[in-house]
Length: 459
Image (cartoon, one colour):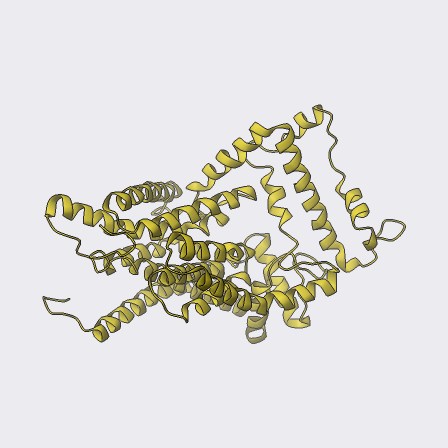
């Protein structure tokens, strides 16, 4: 309704599309401007960026996936390597290719806030959704989208999958499960972390939201499996042909777990050794466990498997450390993994550049305020009896993922991936806070489009 006149559905839809288009132009514009003003960019900083860049060039020349070395690899998902390789076919190498990559990552980053906006808009007036999405003009997010890492595209697909999860909880559109499934598939091509998203989605739709019957949830699970199989089956077959092992995703999962044992209080190697526990000889363990890969002299039969075997050893060491630490220093282990590491990344922003107008300390403060406001949102949802189920889902999904990240290498990059749960919760919280104010001091009933009736949270 505008100026007391009822807005037609067509006009409302056009207005919403216009808002989304302007928001997208703003997000894309600031990222493109950043890329043009800093043509060298930040995408080549760090070992991972260099490895992705070089593996992409190699893929363009040979069609082979090799990462971080000369051997055929399944250490990481192939999305970034293939995308860089495709771009290099059009832009060759050097500055043109780097700029093309930078602009492509800017494009990914420009769509992420649109899905955050659309997620919040499902439950709130437009102003709440806009304020939530506008956080993505902060330099923190522009910097993230300038690094040639998996996070840029993965964040977009994660936000997209989260939007369709929430939308399926509010509307019955049979097309949404397909859109959701392909968003998960898109994210999976870049990072394995999103593979757990369908579990949260199905739990939300069938248990928390209780919108669908068990049969309907199983049908949706079948669609998800069918879409994911389009990639996982040929990828698994490729890996089995090369490594003679069942590798449906990557063989690098043990690496972040291993690095994570050095965080917090750290693996107490000296104390455990003093108890008479010998450290693991991962090379010997691998030779015994995978003897078919070695000759009688202990050398690899196929040099192409060198990277694969190395990370098998890393996984064995990680498994040994976790099991030994838990067995002999249980209290210290639980403190590190249940408190120290999750607390460290709770409000640790991924902000590698410290700008004068946007100092690191200020970004940390914003993150802490967001955390407090999310707690206030949960309290308001209970008091006002509105949006309780969606806030419960966002809170549980965030906390579970926080501990999943903490079990591995708990750093700012990985913690940023689950912040959309908090952003969306805060966006809904703005509307809840406004309604609480109206009820307390305005003497008015709920004024937002989604507030008047909430079938899942009856007043």
